[in-house]
Length: 394
Ligand SMILES: Cc1cc2nc3c(=O)[nH]c(=O)nc-3n(C[C@H](O)[C@H](O)[C@H](O)COP(=O)(O)O)c2cc1C
Ligand SMILES: [Fe+2]
Ligand SMILES: [Fe+2]
Image (cartoon, rainbow, N blue to C red):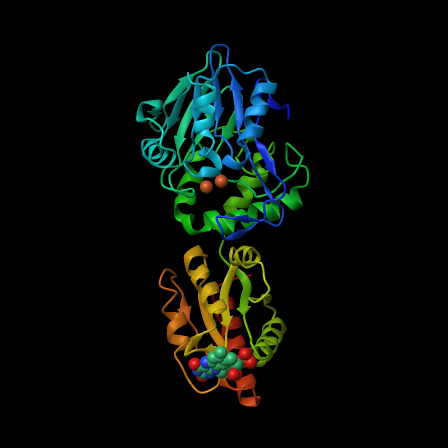
């Protein structure tokens, strides 16, 4: 049970998931996560902003009991994903008089997913307001952060923005507000990379839209609350708007050490030319780290041996992720070793259709790399350094 007030009459009533290590059966959670739900009490009405993952519904109900809440007028569903909407049916059971407020698109998704009666959900338009008496909630549609139905809720009198996933971080912490900005920056950047980056143009539009609001607190639905909103708004602006930097990301895999030797040489050649490198052994790495490195990188070079006529499956997986995450990369290339032949380059290049990138001449070598192969890797490093310089990537 927790009693945590972020503003007078505005309580955090969520759940901290210290032990969860995987999200969406895909995303590593090295620091756990939280599902933040907020209760807002006005002079006449009470609203609950988002709920929690259904595995933790008991925590939410306990927190509401602890505050002595015996009725809720509005349950605001900013997002239909189950980590925020999944406990809505339990809240409706406990508080049968409540009405769900959601965007029209979210309404359909909630009815489909949670199998709740349509008449329990009222839709709200972009900019629409609802009065809680002395407090006003304004709904701001912010589509595609990171699903099509998403919105943010703004508590006007207190200038608190509840943007759900937008600006969130997967971080289990007992800090209600951000205490260690360095730690939260890392977690929020990882979250942005994994969840938000594929929707960069929508994020851009929604950041512009939020400029029209005075915001003192950003209370998102994962991680600690921002009482210094510029910290996370500036970080988002830089991740979204800034040019890529003089960084090469090298995800690679090697079965018998040949590709690894190429990677070692190549990384040295890049570093000698003043380039920052982030190297990931795909057999061991946390893919979230790789995703994070893609936020600022100008170039990715995938290292892979040829296996069963194509790239190693770990390299194919990493390439699929790079393509799906749509980072602001400008250049890609491939290096690796083969035994007799195959279609590694064609297969990997064909997997990058979502990126607007120039593919630089790959370097494949037969067996263990020799002098001519190292020279080819040096040439690739020179080309990358020149391309970065020409584009002013610093
Ligand atoms: C399971 C397996 C499948 C392979 N399939 C191919 C292939 O289809 N075509 C090819 O040229 N080499 C193939 N090879 C050979 C490797 O590409 C070659 O040994 C390469 O040098 C390994 O690089 P590494 O030392 O970085 O693992 C295969 C090797 C293994 C172990
Ligand atoms: Fe989500
Ligand atoms: Fe979420």
